[in-house]
Length: 82
Image (cartoon, rainbow, N blue to C red; front, side):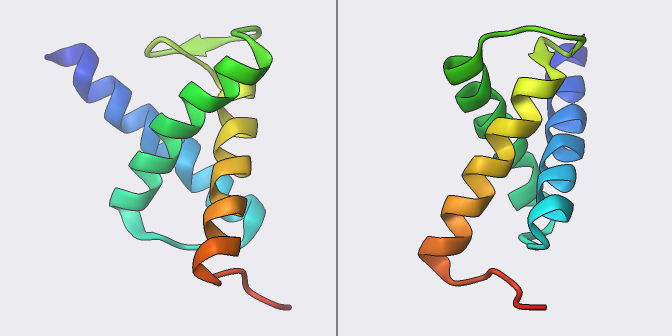
């Protein structure tokens, strides 16, 4: 149970970082989903290298979450134009 809570917390942080990089906001539930799915995607594409928290390799996870949020933003048209 404790591991599950850590996965949610780290997933939310990774998703928030990806949202900040892409300047997109999907809320805290969206951050968690983006962080967890982005972590899976990033580790699938890049492997699991670098530091790891809650079973997620941080750098590939952030890169995967950025890719996921960017693609979702293109699909749903939420990219902010500065």
